[in-house]
Amino acid sequence: MADLYKENILEHYQNPSNYGTIDQPDITYEDTNPLCGDRIRIDVRVKDGKIAEIKFSGRGCAISQASASILTEMVEGEELEKVRDLSAQDILDELAIPISPARVKCALLGLKVLKSGAYGITDWPAAD
Amino acid sequence: MSTPARSQATFDAARVRADFPILGRTARGKRLAYLDSAASTQKPTRVIDAINAFYRESNANVHRGVYELSEKSTELYDQARGRIARLINAPDKRECIFVRNTTEALNLVANSWGRENLSAGDAIVLTTLEHHSNIVPWQLVAQQTGAQLRYVDIDDDGRLRMDQYQQILKEEAVKVVAVTHVSNTLGTITPLKEITRLAHDAGAIVVADAAQSVPHMQVDVQDLGIDFMAFSGHKMVGPMGIGVMWGRRDLLEAMPPYQGGGSMIREVHLDHSTWADLPEKFEAGTPSVADAVGLAAAADYLSELGFEQIRQHEIQLTNYALGQLKEIPGIRLFGPDGEDRAGVVSFLLDGAHPHDIASILDGEGVAVRAGHHCAQPLMRRLDVTATARASFYVYNTEEDVDQLVHSIEAVNSIFGSGAR
Image 1 (cartoon, one colour):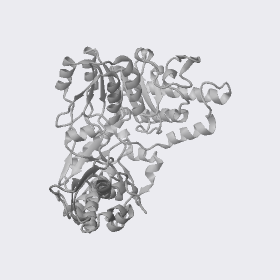
Image 2 (cartoon, each protein chain N blue to C red):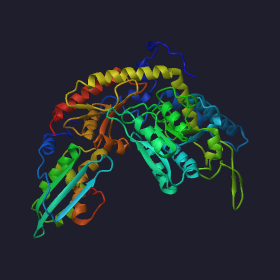
Image 3 (tube, helix red, strand yellow):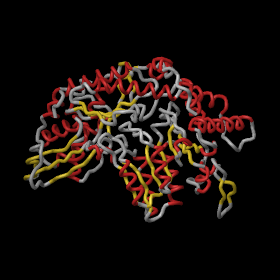
Image 4 (cartoon, chains in turn cyan, green):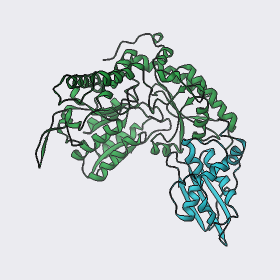
């Protein structure tokens, strides 16, 4: 089980990147994982079609929080359009830990919130 | 009904464990410490064999057949009902209605009794301890009838606020009190007999969610004085898919059917029908006979272990667990400390989310549950989003508890106590 809680996951959980909120964001969205009550909010400031600033906040398990932290690093400075193409597999690849079926929704909560906020895509993201 | 208390030494949990084939397997390559019996219990060979034997030797649909197999199946189904009546000391086995589970039993009462007897201005009393299955059916019937929901809160130890309960009974037109006998999250054993006495004095009936009590202690519906009771087979070493709704005969006879279909009718005409007598009135469609037979085998098994012995074993094991858990840095334990606590231990660790705790424990072969335990109002009352929960049963041993404690120490070594 140490596999799941590799150092980078714990590091992102305990010292997350881009943690916080944005005053007057262009996009803000919050959602929960109904199975466990984990909650993530993502705020985005968009400039020239790019994600100029992104912050997340919320509470939940190490997997959901670390995954959201890693997601913000993945998309910051990127074209907002690229978010639409991000798949569940992209996130799981980036996490690089063995996620069991019971924990997949933890890992994908951040992506779901970001896609919902940016495009109103409220389904859970599918793997490739 | 209560069996004379034998010496505790007669209860040998390691031998009981050997009756459950699944507990001989490993989980994630480790010895399996199954500590999620509040969610569902494992099954002893005797129950598995009873189901198997039914399908091999006696299977046919009940009631309507005149041939030998159908007679046999009907007889076994009827015997199972009698066995369940003895288990809970029901005065009449026709008061025991087979359903799928506790949830279906509570929906049956809320719909059939509730829609017939509740109207605008009436109050339904629930508690913050309730499982969603004893909340949502009442919310639905409240919407349909205009009745109001009132909740009895808990104190900080997780015990019901009886002062508040009495106040509600005094101030509102309470028609029904629907209350859990044992909290699935905190382990609180509620004073059901006293709750019932007060409810009856106020002219209200009592519906008991006994999903977490019937498997673990002697429950006597006549001694408690309650009016309806719901429980599940799968939480008492019986099969999934079978449960029981017990109700007082006079109430059941006055109630309309819950579901329509085969078995529950006397006569069907093009424009109307008349109903069968109890219990068939509430058992539309082909019942799960094999599961009823399995449940009867489970009742036999538990009765032979002895409910007094089962309760004593769980008290010992819970105290053994609490004594060690209290010593773990950063742990927060929930639930009352005392005689009125069942074998359920909810806990949190500083710096580690319950789902992470459960994942790490899973890696050590320890099966616990993490989440809201289908009790979101209780989670809000405790001001937490989730807890981790270990629950004990007949087959759990001190070795299981030791494995749990060592694994929690592993959580602390990964996350570091007090990290966030």
